[in-house]
Length: 356
Image (cartoon, rainbow, N blue to C red):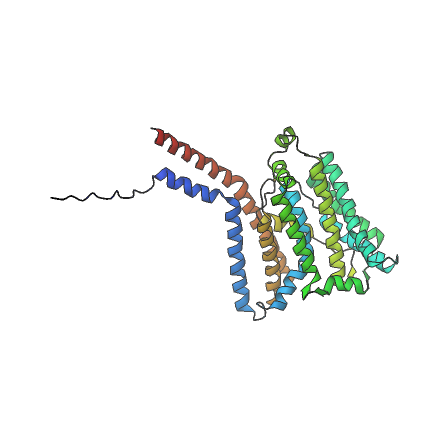
């Protein structure tokens, strides 16, 4: 009588193991937030494509990307500052001042286009350096300081010129509305800025320092990291990016308006950064999420315009996006650490059960 040995049946994983795996996946907050936003972007594109036949065209895609190129350049730099645990709320007024300086260089001071562009970027960098001295070196509150600078820079812009300046010449027109190899020049600039920031934060030692400072500045100081010099440099870079954004906007519209240029762009930039999964307190965030959020807000604004929605409703939509971004920030900073603690506790229980 022959007997066949039964194969051992695969038993299901114990409950703590299954829960631990679930909490581990859910605790990966960057992955979760980016996928939520990507799904929302896909749904938004589908809705607008059904409502407007011109939405899914290359010309409309160019309009979305070029119209938002300036804010993209700004958030590419400002994201690094936010990950380090700092914020600059003066960037909107910095854009206005930088664009006005560049415009006056071209129209009244008889400078060449490269000098005017350098003057605009340099103006933004100087404003960023002033913020860096007070916030990074002297340790003043970044929110209060940069809110004060928001009014100072806007007032300085109006003091320099309280009227619109326009007619910047062919070189600026090429920068704002020209193309290179069939791709708009502004799009080349914003792609280069996003790529540079992503590579810096991901592949360099200084990029790891930014995360460490954002997570715990005191521990980073004890580890001899440049907890003052690096945030100061990031303020300067953010200011220079605001200056470049101001030059791009001036080139796009062939002029500068002291009262409306850059208005509320600091809130738009902050919305993109938070919506992209960057923690307001610092220490968490990826450039991929910020890029998705940048495209999301551009698509939202463009789609509402195509549907002839009034600007007041668009303003409400932008405010709702900021509130949603704050909710995601709370999800990342409050819920995710608790899930991580629960996951570690479950792993310890499983290890103790295995030893027993």
